[in-house]
Length: 116
Image 1: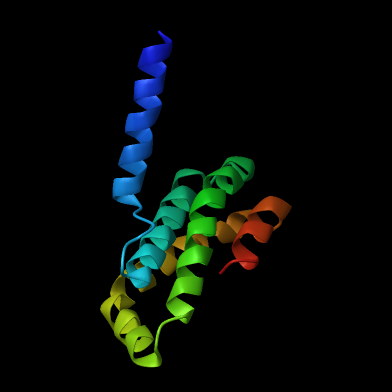
Image 2: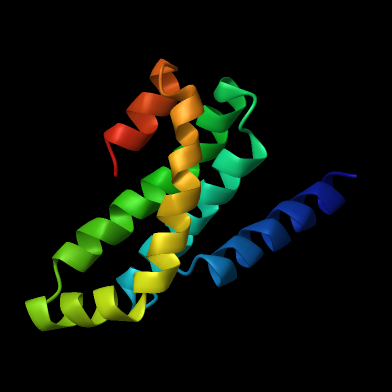
């Protein structure tokens, strides 16, 4: 039984590394994927602000890391990343606007305002 749990946890960890590769060379992509994940969390939990705050915490932290990595790039590379992901960022930000329903929830506000 313990062996199955360990194998399951290992497979979950490997899957997470494949999906969110911390060593990927494109911080713009990581930032956009985090924004899209936050937008999905906002849409999925629009009626429950505490659940929304819980769902936003991990992608907001990944967004923050990717934004720092993007800020460390040369200005030309930053411009290229902005141009490459403009439409995806616009779509995710439009969906994030629904978080205004939970704007008075301190946890949601702290998660979004302090990172975005």
